[in-house]
Length: 535
Image (tube, rainbow, N blue to C red; front, top):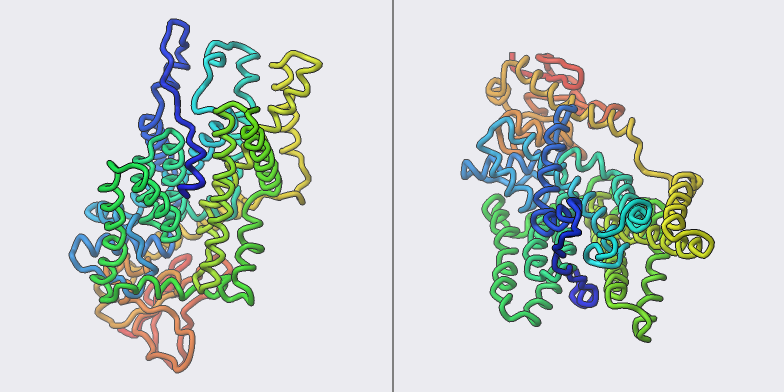
């Protein structure tokens, strides 16, 4: 949230209007403002996320490590070596959940999914807000009824719906957040902070965005610039800025020093990406932008985002000539700022990939959310413009509703080659079900093999690479206690216990049983086989 970009984008919400003509819906909208709205959305998202556990669920690799770290912190025995990069935000939650024992993984899944739902909700809200080019409902809209009311609200809801659908359809958004990754939560926090800034609550915006700075270090340049801007323009906020700036290294580096003995272990770990990372391409920067960032968002939304940027630029040019109102000018500045920030985020991830970091698709979620907001606004503004043109031959309300209906048809039936959705729901469901089956099958396999203590007494344990933290959690040990399959030569000594599995349904069964080794299969389930040298 660049201070320079957002200073012009303030859209302060006017004071609620009270009067005898206020409808129940208007009074509800006035009450659901600011913190009340966020709390209400969070409660709904929590309930939905809790019910989502009725579907087979499990965390993925990184979330399992965060859950283990939470357990280790509670027992004052943190060991971060052998896991992914350290992340303060999720570990704060998993530490709080650790006393709940076996329920801790599911509690974290609820939080991660709540964050993703909040990100979708805030994408919806920002697109709706900016399409209307005001901070709240105008007085004439509050008094409107019937078709006129629908005509006033329809473009905004079209924009908000398209923006939310764009984020949901971004490649991997559903599966990554269902598996407990934290980028959806981080995006929700940033979008709330932006909304608070547009309300004129800069200190709140800075404090809220601090949570995002605890999840991804890429947010630091934007958050830091905003903090410096706040420090310069608001003397009373200087203690807050200094305090949160000082807290960043405390949360990020001191736990690594405790858990690994090295302040920057997490930085070194992040520069060891998976084998299929774009970091190994001949041009990682190009591969990240072309093959990952560009296909992430529907082309019909990206094109609309370009249209919105053009309209906003034209609006700001007219404002300089004194031909535009104050509220539209601020909305135009906000739309341009969000577009710049979204693109800047995607470019920053590409730069980090060029520097040797992994460049996973889930890192792009924040940029995708911002671009989707702008794209949704583009569709909403197109509906408004279309309504103005049709109003020359029919009633304004009929014209606007007709324009919105026509654009809905256009959006739905644009040829699939113009931005086909990246979401394959049946495939995502099969993948998530398989991952959940791994979790339940592992628990049963360990029990069939005689329990965790018996396997640990046997000696060294090796499993498929992506299952290392889940096996460590199930056996109640540090992640480093479990080995992954060897990837080079010379080969390490054969382990005493092999816990075989496939990373995905069609992947290779790993680890392979060494030749001339005396193993006995002690447990077998649908997805796991356990072999031991101990009789």
